[in-house]
Image (cartoon, rainbow, N blue to C red; front, side, top):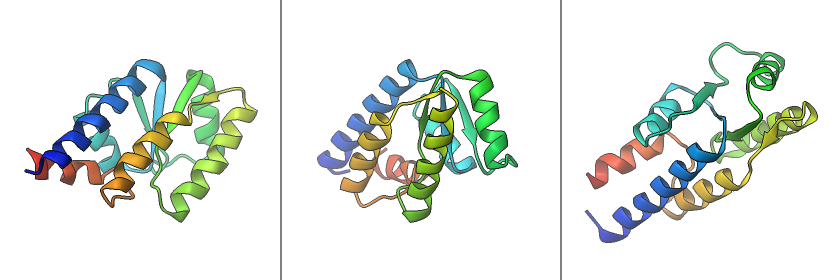
Length: 128
């Protein structure tokens, strides 16, 4: 284990814990992303947009249950595009989208060459 990896993981863990205290729900792409966040201690609802929701249904579902969400789609082109679309839809429905956590987590993962939330699992396994 490299000391820098452990330090990076601790930083990531701190951001995820702060996010869990602040938002009502987190949106991710799929089950592995959800698993990665649960392993990091997320206690709030984690909604997956790959779970059969259409875009409109997902916006409606989140609007009816939550006031503040974080969107943690992957940091590739498709993930960024969906993040932008979902953020616009939720904000149009007066749901606050907390962007800061996506930016912080993206920066931390990018520093280690990772572009997806599910990569947290392999990063954690490499460290521990």
